[in-house]
Length: 428
Ligand code: HEM
Image (cartoon, rainbow, N blue to C red; front, side, top):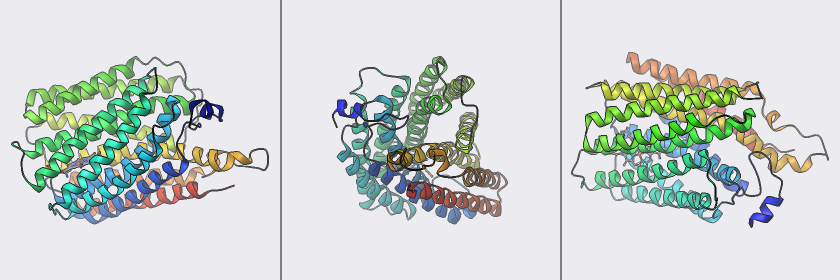
């Protein structure tokens, strides 16, 4: 669509004529919800035996079901909505985004299936190659969308950096998949695995969430004019720390790794300071469960940074602490913010596409009235209770507690799917 025509269409917070079709965004969200349910089922299945070293076939499958099945499709869908809207440029190519989505779905299913059963035949690197191609297409599409914008905001800088970290993470992932199929690395692959996991978890998800959080907090809490100093410091600390961490892991350099982890912890503190600065200037005082989930996710982030620092200082940390670290960072930090912000973004988009044409013609609910608060609140409580019980089960070595936690999380996943289905299906 040409920019003049796009600009002439109504502008409203999260949507303008610059955004791609709602079908594309919905397809990503539906895929993510299916992935969430499968991940929850997998967690229940694995929870009673969830102990020992992190490198296990089922755990590899479960981790990627979480990130590739649930978190990444929703993050990519939200990016396709937010990037064109926040930066007021049309998405480079919607067709490329559809192609990337199909390659992604096929690659993710193949990779998770092969990991779960540790079958490392040709299908394993082939699935990784499909994913790599898909992520390159996504990143190219989004980066060339951003390149159309002459001026860059702090959020834009975070988004660009997050996409570069994603490309690096997937590059490492492809190299590791090939190594499992036909060993070629001259180093311990577990060191590259750590670099891969941190480039993806903190480099992509972490920076993306931090950068977008600044913008969404300002938009939804009506907070204007906050200084960005802490946000800029957070960007520098986290990126410098990540570069140090990757070099430290790959070269097995202990001092590098400790300094890098300290820099990342400092970056997380600066991020929280920036959130506090924006929050303090808000004009909208009332917060709902979407914000409680979001602020809980920042608490998970702070805990992950503390545990991460502990892990690099501890010479031989217990396996359970490493597993807990992954649980706090992925379903805890990334999962909470993904669910929380979806409760904000989705009703707004559905309202804009389905309800807004009827304004003035008949009585239409406000976006916030499409789904009542109670089911969202119950879902959030179940999610945190499930994750915390799972963590307690890991700490005490109790299989029964771990299973109870996984069942709580699964109940929250079903309720989240029910809640989002109601929003996605609602019509005037
Ligand atoms: C973008 C989100 C991703 C995240 C957060 C992520 C995270 C992780 C984590 C935490 C592990 C270690 C799991 C364990 O040992 O239990 C791991 C391993 C692995 N990942 Fe990913 N991953 C992501 C995407 C990918 C992609 C797209 C590929 C393929 C192209 C991939 C390929 C692999 C492989 C092959 C391993 C096993 C490495 C080895 O055995 O040495 N990952 N990943």
